[in-house]
Image (cartoon, rainbow, N blue to C red; front, side):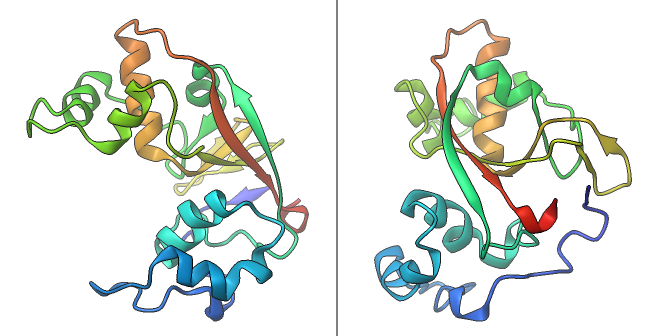
Amino acid sequence: MIDLRKIGEDLVWPDCLEPRGYGDHSVEDFRSWWKRNGENLKQLPEALAEQWIYRHWRDSVASFIPIDDLEYREETWPPDHFITKVGTVRGNEPLNPKHDFKVFSGHRTGEKLMTAQALDSGHWDYPPIVLKTPEGFIDCIGHHIKTEYFLVEGHKRRRYLNALLNRGKKVSDQRVFVIYSPSLA
């Protein structure tokens, strides 16, 4: 079972995958990064590699997942599955739909966030990424979270989706990348 109490301590990805300039204002663009690393990640779709490994690198809550033997599949889920079947690093973290709706819909800034723009158009711009955890996982404070999946990437999308569902909005089924790492089993 995955234990997240020491999350952030282990980056198991090879250094060659680090985007050049990561952490600076001039990080290399995804195309250049993919040209250098696509062969090493050929078992993954570009969109998954871009949104998770390239974009978040060592800041990812899931940089402990080995990518050498990583398997994936793309699924289509009813919207409520993404709320009820997925746990986060903080376990079954409480969601605040009223606050999240205000933040993402632009009530505070006057500008709707990209997360909201994409979902308001019907579908996420990128499928969120979840790790299959058949036995659940231990969250960062030691609780056993009995969910089928751990949220790797897509925390803001999850919050905004929950806000929309809480307001009674009909949301279509959404694409999700489900990953599985045999070496973590």
